[in-house]
Each structure stands twice: as structure tokens, then as C-alpha cells.
Amino acid sequence: MTDRLAELSAAGVAVWLDDLSRPRLTTGSLKKMLDEQHVVGVTTNPSIFQKALSDADAYDSQLRDLAEMRVTVEEAVRLMTAQDVRNACDVERSAYVASNGVDGRVSIEVDPRKAHETESTVAEAKTLWWLVDRENLYIKIPATLAGLPAITQVLAAGISVNVTLIFSNERYRQVMDAFLAGIEQAKANGHDLSKIGSVASFFVSRVDSEIDKRLDKIGSDEAKALKGKAAIANAQLAYEAYEEVFGTDRWKALASAGAQPQRPLWASTSTKNPEYKDTIYVEELVAPGTVNTMPESVIHAFADHGVTRPDAVTSSYAAAKQVFADLGTVGIDLPDVFKVLEDEGVDKFEASWKELLEGVDQSLKAAKKA
Image 1 (cartoon, helix red, strand yellow):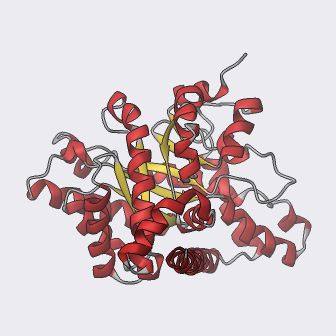
Image 2 (tube, rainbow, N blue to C red):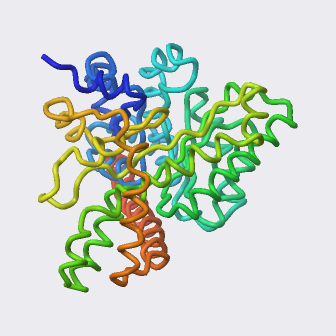
């Protein structure tokens, strides 16, 4: 039987799981995916934890203890999610060691309500880093305008960062600049640069969802012919930007001091349109030195019928630029698309976080009565 995930990994794409829950840890599910499906990292977000912690039974014992301690809802959420992430870091530790600190990483996100507050984001990032206390941790910080200086400050403190909610290449270039500035400051602060990791999470399928909706509204044959093309083209051009920035003398000076590059991470890689192939956002984004974080369903789908073309991205720059030119021609306002997606992304995570807090609050109250 062909090991398609091994082929994907051999092409330079790290396979990460976009999910985490306590049962996934206690049943050994995550360890099995590491051993059998080449899953060498884990990403989480507020929506994932909202879903995980809605299963109160899995967290019953800890909830009773937290209720007895009379902690606030925010403290309870922080402690429960930190425990899951810490344990996932331990599961992924072998991948971390085997890759010399490149993979085997697990992400935890700052409170999304602070997405537009630089100093609060920095403070929470430092607190989460201390609380989880694992060197293979990533702190997720959104790529909002307020998030950019936070990224630099957190990296400068020697803390590894997963930059999330990147939609446009313009913002991606700002993220890479924030990364370089942070690593330069970390070097000046005396940190071991080889220990500081970072990925830049570039969201994919959501771009097609928003642009396809607008193309349908335009309704012309030219517009409809562009459906399902924007997200992949956008990510492919992001990789071209990555190659450019990490080929500069500025980066080479940091690399010579032991720094690791900030890898592009393809996020939101499950297809939202059932007409599209379920592995399209994996197959069309194969490139060396990247990460693809997938829901378990996409991992299984790729293992079953995915195809790896090592030059899928690097051979497509000209075609990707033509897609963007054509989008402009038919009337797609790309800056507006990316602003809407960023705003919606923050709003969705904030809504999930509020729902998470409400659910935990109810569980704490129930535990106090028990």
C-alpha cells in the first residue's frame, strides 16, 4: 500500500493535526497519529477548544477541583487548555527531538478578545509560555495590525510564535518583517536563536469561500471560471514571497547565528465547497519547508487518495499571478476581501471563546452544587 502521507512528508510538507481534545490524549489517539500517520505537530484555536470543552465529562475531575478552588472562569479555561496543550507537547516531544526542534510543536492561542491590543497580547503570551512550560510550544498571535508589534516583542523574549489569521500577501510580508525584527532583537537579548521557532499560518479555503460568493454575484462566465482558484493562487504567491524574503542578506545573517526560518503553514485546508476535491488544499500547496495543518478527516482523505507533486507551488507562480489579474478584471476588490476575512476570523474566534467561557461557567456552577 502506498504511504501517501510519507510521500507528502518527504516532499518537505510537515503534516500537523488541526485538533486537540482530552480524549484524543487519554485514548492515545494523538500518539497513534504520530506513529502511524506522520503527524508531527498540533494546532489549536478557540473554536477547537470550545468544541473540546463542551464535553464536560472529559474534564469532570478537573472541573470539580477548579470549582473547589473557586477560580474564575477565565482561570479555569486557561488551566484546562494549558493542561491539554502541555500533554500534547509531551506526546510530540519525540518528533521535536528528531527534527532538531523544527517539528513536534503544539500551539495555544492568546485570548482572541485581545486581538487588537498589543500589550495585553504580549502579557498573555508570556503567561501562557510560563504556564505550559514546554519548549516545543507555540504561542498563537493573530496577524492584526496590533498583533504585528506583539509578534516582534514575544519573539524578542525568546518565545516561539505561530502567527495566525493571515489572509493577504501584503499582511504576510509585514508578518515576515515582524519575525525578522523579533529574531534580531532576540539575538541582541542573548537568546539561543536555534531554540526559537515560528510559523506563519496562511489561511486558504476561507479565501475561496468569500471570493466564490462574490464571483457568483457578478455572474459572468469569466467570473464563474475563476471559482475555486483564488485561495490556491494566493497561497502560492505567499510562498514566492517567502522564498524572496528568506533569500535576503538580512535573513542569511540571522541564519548564520543559528536562527530557524519562519515556515509558511497552510491553515483552513478542509474544503468548504463539496464540489471541490477534498484534498485540493493539500495537493496544490506542496512545497519544501512548509506545514499543512489538517483536520483528521483531511489527513485520512489524503492517506487514501492524495497525490504529491513536489513542484506544485514553485511551478505555478505565473499562473497564480494571472488568476489575480483576472480577479481584478472581473471586479473583485481584493483588499476588501482580505479585510472582511480578517475581521470575520477575529469575530468567529471571539464568539467561540465567549461560548467556551459560558459553557465552562455553567460546568463550574454545576460542579459546585454536586
